Length: 472
Ligand code: SF4
Image 1 (cartoon, helix red, strand yellow):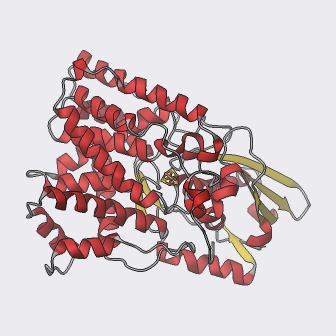
Image 2 (tube, protein in one colour):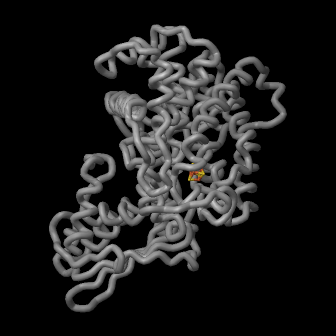
Image 3 (cartoon, helix red, strand yellow):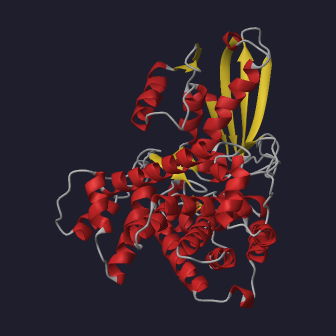
């Protein structure tokens, strides 16, 4: 597979890449597949059947909301997130839905979206079917799997529909990265760029990287200034704003730019740095939990780790340029692609090691590169970060991406910074564990992990925290 860095790090919407963005995309895809052969005006009724993990935690993860928006023709990359609740309320109140904003059908979410918690489809725990019935009573059924990070597939984990394209320097493992860099005397950025240039222009690469960075900064800024209770009924208070307020110590600013200039002028203590990193990560994941605009990296549940570490580097590193920010994102994306190919980035397949663990490894390698480490140091940092997330389970309380997810992003970010520091102070030649060994171990751990700990909310914290959901 040729997985672009922009397949791993992309603009998204909360709260879940596998349970929100994937089903949203699948809903769009089923109408696209149907329209390739038939006229949309033939459709009288649509039923959505959710299975496995999508059925068990779909309500808390917004899967039902996502499929309605996808069927309605909205794109999660561009939709104004402020409109989401309005569109969903209209469907519920009128019991109608306009397919692709064109074909009006009767649609009652309580009847036409079915949660089959006792059934799992064979290809992947996140299976779903869209059953389209025409006025002539013909039935068309489309099955998709949401395989993590917003990827969808029609038949299972490793068969996602990706561009039919081969990179000039295909990188599946850490050893490929090392080999190409050594054989051709490439800098790692040069190598990643050569592959991306086979898909898009240099201008496009730069523009996409800057868009990702702008979106990350905006999500941190919004999260640092939003207060109140997160949606979903768990009554989880947002915490980033209070932490941020304390850290700003009364400094006055009028906009995001002034705020950033102030942050970059600071020389924080170790304790302040720890709090800032936590604050950045909490801010993003609180926005994610509230259906906000975030950057999926490599998933939404783990969307706070890479931005928190990048923001830490940008604000408190020495003379960090925009080019360095772009390099950070490129290395992070490349490491994520290695995990996607060698293991999984789906919590329903591998637990939270596949989300927070992978994002921490991505951030660790990226920070190591930006602080002057060699490619061998970067691989070592990614390995260290993942090694200490192996076996991490996924047990979201109430099926919502809030507890333990939001705090877990802070922990993943801090571990990434520690891993980078350890790697930079080590000789990679003396390392006993390679990145490829840890990727293999992660995948084997995923296969051995009890299904209770794979985004089902049937084990761990999800069982032991009293949940009194007001709404879902
Ligand atoms: S526990 Fe981890 S993997 Fe599971 S939903 Fe939360 S962040 Fe995602």
